[in-house]
Image (cartoon, rainbow, N blue to C red; front, top):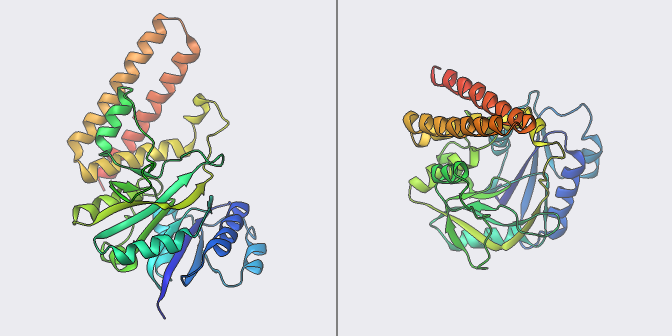
Length: 304
């Protein structure tokens, strides 16, 4: 039997956050029928036992391998009965009746392909909720240290954007299935960017709906920047970035982006060599090594 909204949450060793997220959904959501589907990406054994007992109406799916973000969400969708799908991160908390707000908005706007709310950090300051700039342009702004704005809707009115951040992405199930879901070539990062790209290219609108309010507890790492470079997630972010640009901008522009970054890194290394600053020099050397390694991995991907 079809219901209004299937809420899909992918978990990987975040049991406490997940429990808080489920509780916020159940306490804040009213006026719309929904189901919650949790896909566990092969977390530590028995880590969710207390949640399966506490929330018997939640459908838990236990994967025998870590599928990553996109493929795990695709698995959740295969068990969903909702007219709409709401992809929600486990590190989120609803501040209001956000699900009903997004549902009503989509019901009234047939040209909307994807929507999402305004997200806040734990201290209630604006968090990145969407992107309203072409990603290649954004990357060159980053390279040349140009000013960038946090994607947060201060207008209090729905507005068209380029990408809704995947932490709270709301989409019709029929449209998601029509586009065959998240691209499995992405393990983590850029899945929602690539999906929004395809949907927007087909003529649908991507809409920020600020009336829906959600806390996103994604915080900065306590590690220093040099250690951050060694983290798997940092390298995976760059790999997914290269794959995304290859799919949407072509191999040539992806290569240009890589070499533009390498030129910046080379200039930084030269500058800190002249300044006799070994700590800064070590950081930029490590960053250069990570980028080379990740680009080499991307080149292997192209040969598949």
